[in-house]
Structures are given as structure tokens and as C-alpha cells.
Image (cartoon, rainbow, N blue to C red; front, side, top):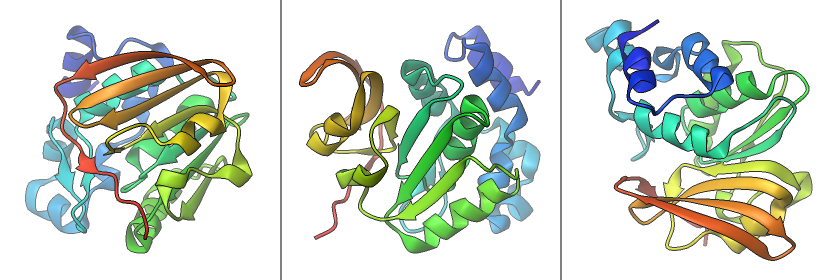
Length: 209
């Protein structure tokens, strides 16, 4: 086990066995830029608890933040998940591992070059339960809805209405709002339980014009 994963477990950021196993099996270094790997080495990338640039003003998220959000999301075997702002594909691959062959992950990324980058990276693991889409993540993915879980990697001023509509009753949605992570649990057609966790930083959610 890597020192970083061990520390995230000891500090309480990683708790669920399926999420921990995914962190162990999906190498963050497989989702970094090749020039960064050559410069810093794979071990540095694996142990570096901070965001990594993947160009276009986007990043591979900090492991602590990904762990925290996945624990809030509580993805389960067989879930259908929408991953908004898939970027490097690291979180997408973690989700694909967690939900297993009976589940499915739809990864949406607005920047075509990053969509292709993430798709190549996830392809290293041979997952058959992932589909990448290039599009405006703020609108969700209505033709594939409803989803058991929705997770976003970019911060808006509020949770997008389309995401709420596309979430199943009983489903969970984790997304940044400003400098906080917000968790919504859908209890009825238009009813949600809400919790907020401040103290995080994210790239902004950009809507297509």
C-alpha cells in the first residue's frame, strides 16, 4: 500500500473497502501527463497529495479531495454514475472499478482534447463499463438518465437543476459549490437532504454558450 493511501485511511478520508481497493488498483500516475512522469517519476505522482496540471487550465484532482467526495457519494456495485468534468479520467476509472461489470459510468468532458486524453488513460485498464462523451456537463446527460450517483469536478454557484432532475430518488449527488462540497440525497421528486463541507478549492464550472 502506498504511503499516501495509508495516510488517507489513518486520517479518515478513506473508509469504504471498495473505494480503498479502487485507490490501490488504479494508479494515479497512469493519468498524468507524460512529460510530468518523465520529470518527476511515477512514485512522486503517486504520493503527491495535491492537484496536477493536465493543461487547458484543468487538473488531476488532489487525492484527498477525490477520496472525500467518493466517500460522500458512496458508489455501490451495479450503480449507474454520471461523472461530470472527467478530465484525466482518474476518478472515472476509480468509479468504474467500484461499480463493477454490472454498473456503468458515463464520463462527460467539454474539452475534446481532455475527453480523448481521459479516454486513452481509462483504456489502459480495459474497462467495458465506461462511455466518454464530449459535451456541456452543466446540462448533465439526459438521454442516459436517471443515475444512481452524480459527481462533478468543477464548482458552480449552485447545483445545476438538470443534475437534480437526472438523479434517481434515493440517489446521491456530490458537487462543488464555491469553496465547499455539497452533498444532495434525493428523497422525493423535488425533495433533497443537503449537507455542505467547506474548505476546498476547485476549477470553475464553465457552461457552453
